[in-house]
Amino acid sequence: MKSKYELTISSNYVKDWTYLQAVREFFQNAIDEEASNSNHSMSYQYDSNEEILTISNQNSKLDVNTLLLGNTSKSNGSYIGSFGEGYKIGILVLLREGKTITIYNGNDLWTTKLINSRRYNSEIPVIEVQKNYRKGNTSLTVEIGNLSEDEYHEIVNSNLRIKEDELNYIIGKTHTDYGDLLVDESEKGNVYVGGLLVTTDFELKYGYDLNPKYVTLNRDRNMISSFDLIWNTSRIIATAFSDHLDKLLDSLDSKDTDYIDSFLKSNSRDDLARFFTEKHGDRIPVTTQEEYNYFKSRGMNPIIVKEKVKSLIGVINYDDYYDHYNSDGSLYDKIKEVMAGLSDFVMEDGLADYQELESLIDQYKDDLSNIKYSK
Image (cartoon, rainbow, N blue to C red):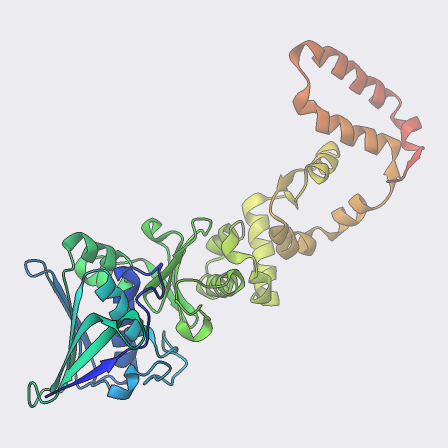
């Protein structure tokens, strides 16, 4: 005898979801189940001839009350999901996309289909439960059918765990408590949470697999706030590169480290300043063309960097230079600054006049230096 459970979810729900998001929900549940209990190990396989993807957890079972929206078997904040409705929506989307989904739930068999409900005057998913279908079985197995090879390859590319398994792909990564830094060029901009692809941001220098414990996702688990993202990438880099000053300094020019100031200790700042000096010698970090021209006109050797580089390094080693720059100077200083800024724009036929003007300014240097210039 079969029991029938109607899920009160309209077939039009989450219109933007495809099989990718739906399958992600089942992998997410399987990964979380394994994380909650090592005896509930996850396994999966894809049969290209039958076009069936199978995802299993040993010694696991779904309670029928999890079919109720809002109910969940998850309680630990380190799990990827926490909404209690993911796999129900996954069932809906897969059926809507013409896939089949069968769940072997311990002894029981769960079959799924879409029906036109008279009660709700809408198409909704229905789960039929047949008790004691296979006695003595203790595993939870989800079979997703009508999944083409191309579709499966897309699933592989959105899941770090199976990507490594299926493609024999060893991803260059550095582990931290906040997540993994993925340094492979192929992962640039990819942002995973718990191994599952959430978004891609090509402005990022690296890829990341964020620890779910430190991330808040939207309901669909396909978006992370820009603040959450960069806050986490900043502290991952601060941690991963704490002993690699060259890589840390190189990363400061990227969006990934916009909040790194919150995670660097004072000794790390001092080390960075010393490393910058070792790498660039007497070059002075500046952020504007005006600053560049000022120091250049005084025979110094400036280098244009991003504001966060100067804030982390420049103010440590070059306070005296900046104090002088920000103070009032002479008319001679200002004219030389302006001339330095124009030097790159002087055409060949005007070069002689430019050089003559420069000579006149130097000739009257003493007089011009006695004239105070205020900004």
